[in-house]
Length: 87
Image 1 (cartoon, rainbow, N blue to C red):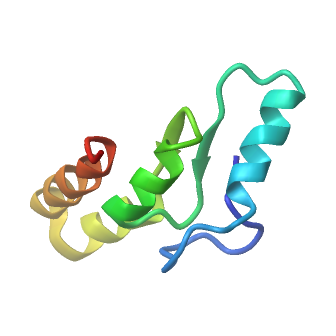
Image 2: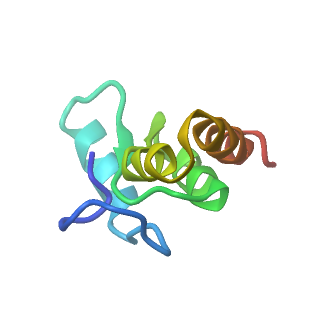
């Protein structure tokens, strides 16, 4: 599911509509719903993981490859994954 309609790319906040999109998809019969569109921080990962079954990261990974290659992707992935372990 997309968290907001619009152009992809990093955003400073997760759309307030994202939680409702997940709820509506599940009410319509979706067994699992993953959310993405602009996810670029561990805080955003934690926020989305609280109500969605998965978090989709795209543009931030592409930017990491462009700007720093494999090492940058490894660092970003490690940083983003901390959002899944926060309590």
